[in-house]
Image (tube, rainbow, N blue to C red; front, top):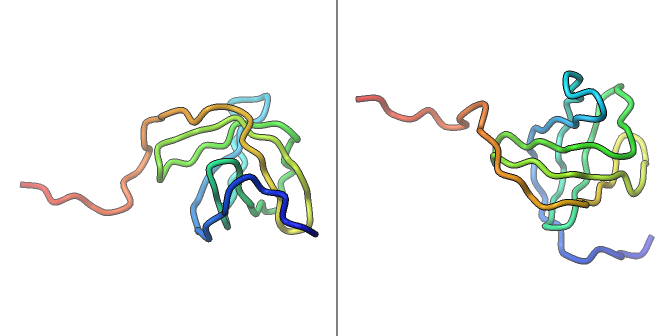
Length: 98
């Protein structure tokens, strides 16, 4: 497959969730590589819809996304909306308390 990406992807390992039409149903996934225009994710046994909101708590962002390709166990994703800032649900490094 030739590389048709608009921007270079960087290898990462981040937890995320995909949210489809039902905002109460989150599908956990792992981001394997990422750029400003898309990413490659790995989803367990859940079925990922073709269009969804990808929430990345570690970065405090979410973005409207769509599936470009599926090759088990990986899924290629294109970002189709602007990055939106969200509230982080967890802190990756404990902050000192005084």
